[in-house]
Length: 427
Ligand SMILES: [Cu+2]
Image (cartoon, rainbow, N blue to C red; front, side, top):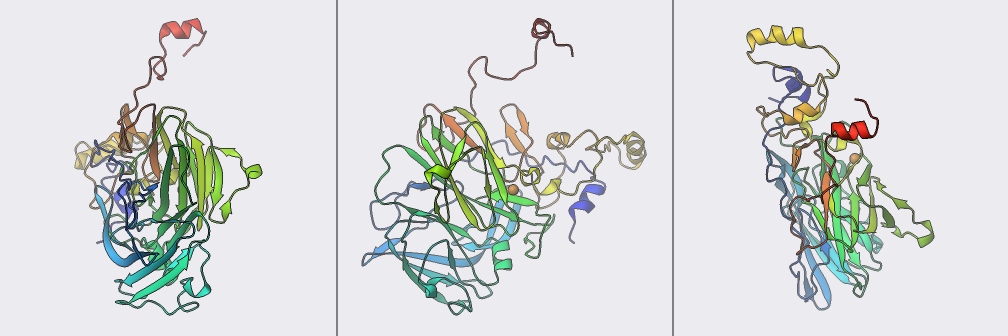
């Protein structure tokens, strides 16, 4: 039986519907950067992929050889929500293809899906026959077949790969990945170079298969396939140049991604670098569908800073959508009546939604609560496309440094009566 969110939320579980669920006390997994060398040279990965990985490669006759496998996978968005997705090499999004400008690459694509596919190299300029458009520039890759793509990365930048065959289904189910092409040479300062891919899915409560026909009402929003609090934090040391490459291959929605505590500059899109004269300082960058946006800033403000889509419904999880709006409603009479048949019953949401984050109730099968994040000061009323940038004066590696300890006098607390009196404030 398919349980719709509305059914669940307006049924006996009612608005409250738990929304806290599987407490993710240890909600801050260590970042899975990709420090390990990949392939046949000593060059280590330069890009860090929170919750993800870089595609291994080997060199054959001066050509970098990669192997992508398109396949059905089981994917966990956060503990409690496992979906039947399609992806590459066991993950969605697929591993990041990392290279250096001028690299000749040969990319084999094996199709283990139940239907045909192809791979388009989005934003990469390739010979027409390598463009990956099924039916137009090549024959489809039928199930069981392996195709070979070969070309040279002729410019640096942040690009993407995705099927150009039954795109609606295949992208909706998770088939996408990022391509990072570095300029030649090394950067003469410490850089934290992050790759994050946004995505959105509609996963009706109680089901495991994202709905490829969805055009709106997406209920699960992700960075690199994970929803907060499962998103691994980005870390930086004071003085580091932080580069965040954002890529959007979601079906329908553009994401205004907002960072707290720092202003950044949009330095590049998948079309190329932004000319210096056109670079504006911003704290939010819009990442439209089908584009990449690369921003840079110097980490100069220690703390735990949120970075999230600013569409409020994109920073929450599955269970919150379509809850009946009871804000301001006096539900006492209703509660009294329902309590006769359901002892202890209490309608939730009448004074706002935050209380839902604090309740612990039974969660419907294969679903995650609306805003389940836990922080050092209580519940963080956020989920979905939300992560943290953790800036510290001293860091070792890319590991999560834990929660920020604010210096004395720099933490918002309840005002004392003496303070109120001093400043002539009446409550
Ligand atoms: Cu968004």
